[in-house]
Structure formats: C-alpha cells, structure tokens
Image (cartoon, rainbow, N blue to C red; front, top):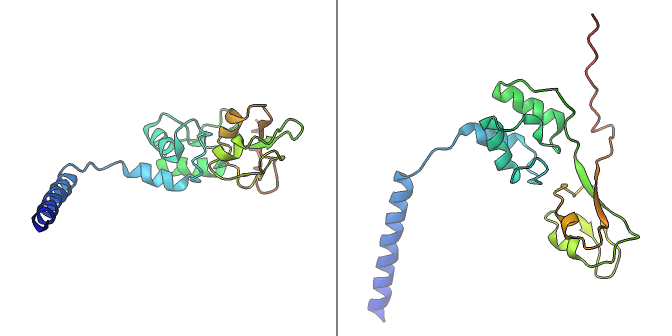
Length: 175
C-alpha cells in the first residue's frame, strides 16, 4: 500500500514538473492592446456586438475587423475612448446601435420558466405558471431568452433615452 502511494506521488510530481516546464517554454505572449481594450469595454459579455463576449470584440477591434463603436452597452463614450487609445479615427458614418433590453408581453406569457433558466444575468423574475417580468437594470440584451420563449412573448426593445444616456449630436458645419 505504501509503495503504491509513493509511486503515485512520484508520477504525479514528475508530470507536474514536466507540465510546468512546458508551460514556461511554450508560452506565447498575446497582444497587450487586446487586454487594454478589453479593460475599457463594459464587460457585459452580452454578445450584442456580434462577437463571443468582450474578449472576442476586443480582438476584432484591435485586428481592425470591427469598429470601436460595435459595443452598444458601451455607447459613444467607450467607442471614442477606444479609438483615442488605439489612435484610429472613429467613423461617424452611421448611428451607433443602441443598447437593447428584453421585455415580456404579459398577455402572451404562459409562465413556462424557460426564459429565466437561460438568462445569464438573472434579469427575469417569475415562477412556474406565473407572469414574468424583466429588470431593465440587470438585462444585458443578450437575446437568449427570446430564442427560448415558446410563445414569442419576449421581444427586444431599445433602452429608453434618459438624461444619463443622451448624447448631444454634433452641430452641422455652416459654410
């Protein structure tokens, strides 16, 4: 029994040593700018930008595959901060997408609980065979609940513009 324990400890120690050396020798440094851009993003990991989380969006922005304004929860302020940090010009060609939140039509909701079981941010409140509601402050707009709803009671709406989210448009240049 003692020899089995000693041999198992020796094997696991040897494998741990080999893995540690391999991790040091085969380590590949990533782009530091990706980490910096990821720290500037809101870390909602909502997927509204079309990328798998904020890490995927940061990689695409640094690689030039996506605009800094691709993050709706971040808004114009985050987009301008990222553009200034990377030294690129922020394209004002179109209106940036507005953040979205889920809303439940109570007349259609059957209380099946499929929506709040899939909600990653626990923004949906309700119980079995009862009406559900969405807390706008907690909803990340990931759209996962709309795909799971069997009755189509959940739809995505734009976040209402408030004093805290309103941005003054640029004035028109007069010649």
